[in-house]
Length: 297
Ligand SMILES: [Zn+2]
Image 1 (cartoon, protein in one colour):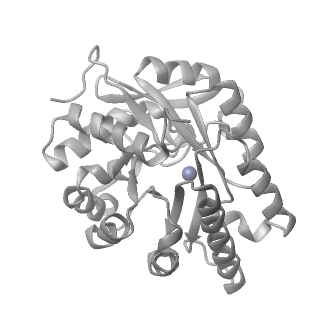
Image 2 (cartoon, rainbow, N blue to C red):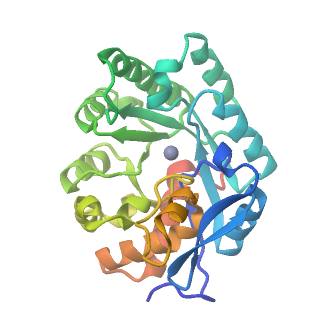
């Protein structure tokens, strides 16, 4: 059975950048009504209220760059029990980072509310100099070490870099305390390495709802990966689903992604795995709580 209006289930958004500046002031955002999407306007607090009304019980916000750590810790303090902070430095931002930033990230990580380290990992999507990749690897290894010291799980951002990332994770296997490979877009065999070999989960979000050309290998991976390894996420304000025909391109492009699309992701997982959507919601919620020790911090 698909989720219908009036039949509210609870869910967790395991990855959203709620303190991102794209959620400042009044902004257009994606809302889901009766199985279709609409665009509405509102501010951050209204969006959080709407998400709660829609059944989102909490969310995890990972860092993008070093400065973002302060913003997300502030938001987590404003919404205790709803926004759980993860502290780190995103791979695409490592090139702008300085030596002193290691100390800053470590200080942010000492905040008692922090539940994970991330986003960290490797991103080879953009054509960059070798120097950038070396920096990414330094920060990645360092953040694995920090997570180990604090006994925290990792939030991984791996894009077009599975081979190198898996090499580093295998070498540091003993330092891993679980975590998630967020916005996963690999195929079933890569999924198996992260899950069954490395004990990590996969974050599944808007990519599953994109054009078949993009989502096909991911659909296979979701089909074949045991449900105990799957988490729901949106990566809002980014990674929107495929544009629906009733919304013009310009309007869709401007709209921010939100946790309100989670039921669509859950429904698609349910279809692929031939499970009732209630089971998908319950299992992914349990998985998120288990991986990040939510409710125990
Ligand atoms: Zn993200």
